[in-house]
Length: 220
Figure 1 (cartoon, one colour):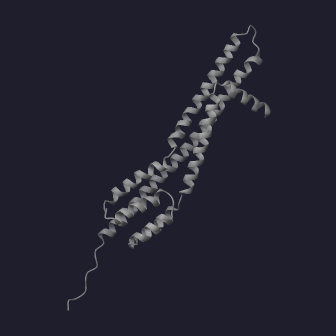
Figure 2 (figure 1 turned 90 degrees about the vertical axis):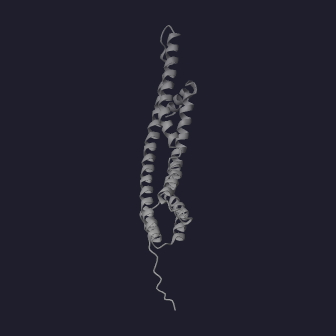
């Protein structure tokens, strides 16, 4: 283990800064992955229970309670519902347009930093390849300077070629796996948002079309 660490540190020094760039990408990737995991976990709600409560309140015209429920729940769906109902109460009856506008505002929050993760997943192996080429070029340069090949002299440059490729591939694979996992979460969230928007739009339209009670009072 100590020998591995020694060779890794030696490769870091001889990689012309490539290894540090790879390690920096790995650190950035780790931070973004943890941030996205926390964000998606914190904003996860029980959609079924949420919609049952919201639909009941909307049917009964208790819009203030709908807003109160949404204020107490995290995530894009409660925010979308709250904004839509609030604008509806302000007199905007174009419900589909309301949901589209609110949805467009929430989508970037769901997709935040995913493009950076995708970029890291693509760049990391290329940096590993660059480190490999640097190590090999130094290795052949060392061979050309000697009459007889001394393996001890070229071994450090071979280690540079190997120890830059491995971390680059590992970081790329892990980052790409999490990227795809997060994309799946975003896609599922968008489907849920669309479903919620359709349900609430239906009930809000019914509340608009609800006939007024006839006046049964008689003139005296």
